[in-house]
Image 1 (cartoon, helix red, strand yellow):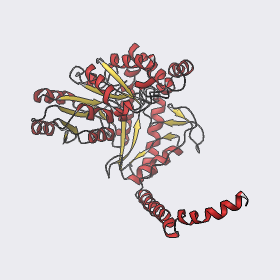
Image 2 (spheres, rainbow, N blue to C red; image 1 turned 30 degrees about the horizontal axis):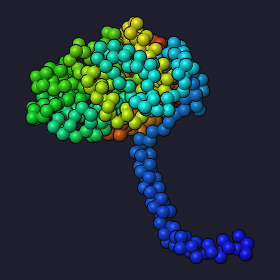
Image 3 (cartoon, rainbow, N blue to C red; image 1 turned 120 degrees about the vertical axis):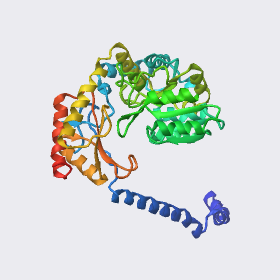
Image 4 (spheres, rainbow, N blue to C red; image 1 turned 135 degrees about the vertical axis):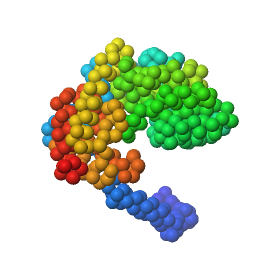
Length: 427
């Protein structure tokens, strides 16, 4: 008997046992079809609401002037977090290339195994120096920094008191901890005091706020927050992603701007905006806290180390800011030029003197259409709508960069006036 014949004869009974019946075979396909139907219905709902978020494709390096797939010529970019123009600064780029050549593309490891190089420790030291804090720990992003802090610091006997409009990463981080949660009305010091009174039985209390709220560009009242925290024996935490590098006389952030650097206990921020724009986040604060985060913070323990090119770029960006405050100081005049000219044209601009300048439009579809028309005029802007912002508060969020010229700003204002008149936003 041949081997093929033997396999056919002896294998037939087993195949009939192992092969699923037709009904069982159909079940996985039915489950997939049902799931796809649910997903497609959800996608159709987003499209119908006018809140669909498409992704435009940039075919150049990041900067105040970019090339966009499907658009002709030079496009003005007014929606990047590239506040200081360092994303393509020649010294920052060169530092990344040098780090790539010397230290490689990546570590293929988390920090505590074999993923810590001298450049990681050097960057942490410089960031601690920049913020005038005892120590620093690096993360893959500030989202990870926020996800990794609260569950380590706070337990079931503690309380966290959080601004209701804090960033999603803060909200998600707080959800991971077992502390009692109190939420106060946005930048409302009276409500904050009430929540501090309600939480007085807690062991530790942490007041949590964005330094700058990214959707509206409004600055947290840190002086009042610190006063209340000291009165009721609480710690203060701020997220400085939209402040580090350019807020305050030396660009140290909102705590420097408002004179409370020695009264804010913990700062989380990012390397992915003003400080080179690549990736990465960090926590600065008391040395004991940073050491505990190295032992227990899950995003730190279970994520690969920051790649050497990213570390090199960020280090050079911080060095430039430590050496001079000239770039940071150039922001104020440019910001006010845009805000004043837009207000005079009849637009409503949210926030105060921050480079985030939300042009308030209300309707999600209107914001999307105006952003598309702006692109046709050579200005890159994005319509923000629910769930990124509350329903009925859609806007085009403009962000001023130190790399923008007065001519760039005036050309963008002209484009807004033209599209605003077309859509009946201004007369």
